[in-house]
Image (cartoon, rainbow over all chains, first blue to last red; front, side, top):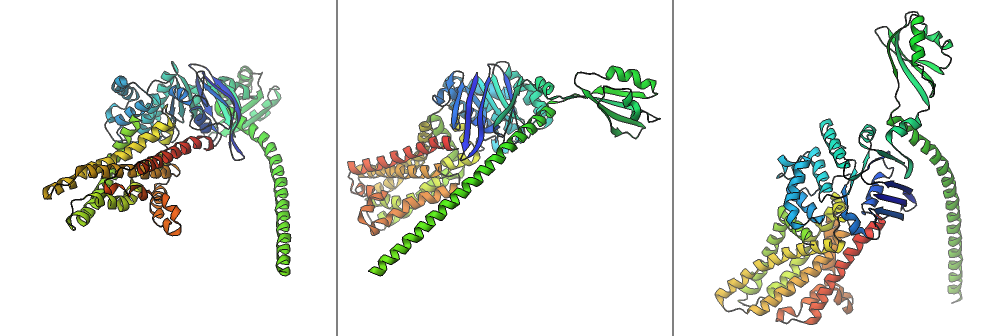
Amino acid sequence: MIQVKNVTKKYGNFKAVDDISFEVKDGEVVGFLGPNGAGKSTTMNMITGYIDPTQGQIIVNGVDVGKRPRKAKKQIGYMPESVPLYEELTVKEFVRYMAELKLVKHKDLKEETNKLIEEVGLKEVENKLIRNLSRGYKQRVSLAGALIGNPDVIILDEPTVGLDPKQITEIRDLIKKLGKNHTVILSSHILSEVSQICEKVVIINKGKIVAIDTPSNLEEKTKSKNTILVTVEDPNNKMESIKDKLKEADEIKLVKDNKDGTKQYAIVSDTNVDLRKKLFDILPKEQIIIFELKKDESTLEDAFISLIDDSKETLKDNSQTTVEEQEEKNLEKNNKTKESKNKQKEKNKKGSKKEDKK
Amino acid sequence: MWAVLKKELKSYFLSPIGYICIGIFLLIFSIFFYLTAIQSASIDLGNLYYNTAMYGLMLIIPILTMRLFAEERKNGTEQLLLTSPRSVTGIVLGKFFAATTVVLITLIISLMYFAILMYFGTPNLVPTLIMMFGFLLLSMAAISIGMFASSITENQIVAAVITAAVLILPWFLPNINESLAALDLMNYYSKFPAGLLSATEVVGLVSFAVMFILFTVIVLKRRKAVK
């Protein structure tokens, strides 16, 4: 179990992570979502004990990372975003070294190294220098480094960046497999990935948590309108007038004019009304032939964008005040420097007077 | 510590750096062997080690130590080390002794000069061993300085230049003020050529090494908070 309690990380006056708190239960797979610079990697670096939080507490399986870092680190496997590797070593040497660093017992070293190399699919390149491997393989070597020693908690910073589609599905399957008996935190830009793998999503923006929920709940929550997409053949252009008969519809708009004579319309209504049944009834009566009719599923992508946009607006308000505050401070500073300059001038004058007296 | 030591040694000899350092070291040894032993027909090896320490260390040690932490930091592999359950002190000591081992290998090879002299006469082994011991201590002090320089930057060249400067500049300091002579590591090596093992010098060199090892540990621990 990972508990992050009121954690803040400051760089000077800039807050990279601002008072975030969340919990990851045993055996949960949690996805970290957020735009670039949101504070995902910083948070992960703090959980792994690579950097210290400015404020707050992180507890991994009951061990405080700040107070007993070595015991906490023993339970964590970490794959950093930049995939750092010792390029002069071979795959086998690297995994073995990582095993030694992770305090794997000497007698288990060989067995565990070989087992993991097989598991991650590195058997055919195990004696190659890491320098000569392709990006996909490097990623897997880095993953092997995180998994060695069988840690309870696995933290993966963007594990699928730069992989081809086949490799991505392979790594995803591996993560799903890991999720059965490990606690996994992973960060990603790819939303479909998170909704596929993770049971819980933490969305961060500008260092603050915007939402924590299951992917499906998030999709549900952010949906404000029901949209039905209908493709019709409408020779008499009656779709325009159909709105009078469909009183529940807020809006009917043309989405696309297909070249085969069909047109796609979007029909927007409140979330609690489903117009599909009615459309099936009404449209044929108006001699409109339905080719396709479907409900537009809102995706995690929409949820993500709307959440981030919301937080941007609130942030804007905040930043305006801070800008004003800063300006005030600057003014004060300028005044102070002016004062000190004046004092200096006076001092200089006094000094010169003294010299004159001499 | 052992895991890091083993890996660092491997890295030294998987890249050309280990061979270049030992090679240049032996070249300098050979030149001074010719100048101090052959040319003056002497079987005393004291000056050989003293001169090599004076002119060799400031060239070799920066190259040997510049990559220790700077390379890890630049490549991000520092993250792997510092998120592992190993202690920072263990990691630092592992790296320190890896570099020391490279110097030790050179010193063992340098016994060949002793063997050559045995052909011409009967050189004294004990003063030579004392001289070598002193050389090792001196190198350890210099390595700790180099390692510290490497830990404060991610640029290997900057690390090397800082190390070279710290090793060379103290030569000229006594000209400014006599009391500054204490900063010159070579001062702690001046009694060894006579075959004397002086406690002051041994303690001086060891405390130099310990001090900079501690500084390195502090820098690495401190960076966690600042980074």
